Length: 344
Ligand SMILES: NC(=O)c1ccc[n+]([C@@H]2O[C@H](COP(=O)([O-])OP(=O)(O)OC[C@H]3O[C@@H](n4cnc5c(N)ncnc54)[C@H](OP(=O)(O)O)[C@@H]3O)[C@@H](O)[C@H]2O)c1
Image (cartoon, rainbow, N blue to C red; front, side, top):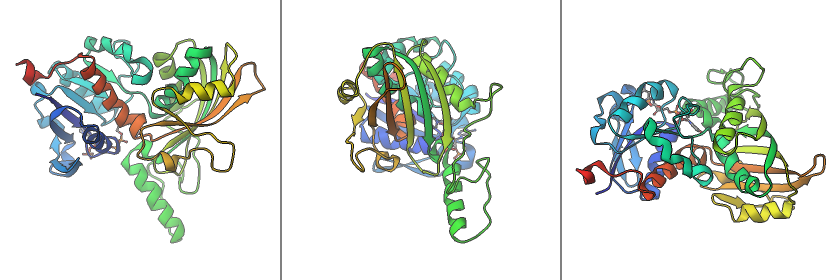
């Protein structure tokens, strides 16, 4: 007997990727239910070589669901995660709503799978922000070796990180540029086609955006509260794949060669780093891939024990759907959950 898995937000960017990854990795599911809002009732989505019909979230009976993968935004997570958890399903949520709750583990399996054991307090596990997930995968082995003091990160985040409507907006605006039509910006605060926007999420009182704040708080919660981090998050006209230019200051010495070797052997990391034209990874090449790619590793002589690097990953996979499914796999492999049907 396998597990019954519900995917909430199954018509969205992340939800569709979740269904694809569940099938690809042959997750031990006996049954997968695809859920979204009432607007999508009856819409069909692919699950491996099967087609699933979307059901409305509010019509689902969760009493025999074991795992609920949620990617429907914060308002839905706020209202539904506790109800679904109360029905006995473990909720793995992609929104930011539960991430900062002290009783909800925030997990990147390569980094802090040990913290999963705490999930029973609320029955909810949070998935980090897409930019944080790929960052901490690369920072972890370096932190273990030389203790990170401070990180300065600039992100180049694709439009898919803002949902399917945001991808449509880049497409429509790009077409309008070529057709010399009027350009409408609805999803983003300014035109995104052939442009960059140095604002992701809302502004906070101190002048940082909430996306930047998330990277600070989430890195501390997942990796180490002592790490100081400052971020500038920028939206770029790329459909899928987030990139990050990262500068790291360590307590102890570490060379670029040592870092390259550590990252080559680290879970989830793939080093592509040759000092010649094209000897690095771009977001386009990371699409559909599971790895966090690290390129341009070099020593930063402007600080004591400094390194700079370029980190790229598919934000819909490691930044969202893949990470959530890796969490579910950890629950199963560590025997932290039992299928309800099997237990009955
Ligand atoms: N994209 C990323 O890189 C990324 C990374 C990390 C986390 N996340 C988070 O994952 C979540 C989803 O992101 P996304 O990019 O997949 O967004 P999206 O493409 O806009 O999809 C949103 C999904 O949520 C569903 N939904 C909305 N309101 C609902 C309701 N009242 N009841 C049930 N379902 C509802 C939508 O269903 P309908 O089609 O029926 O409206 C759709 O399936 C967000 O919280 C986002 O912050 C995204």
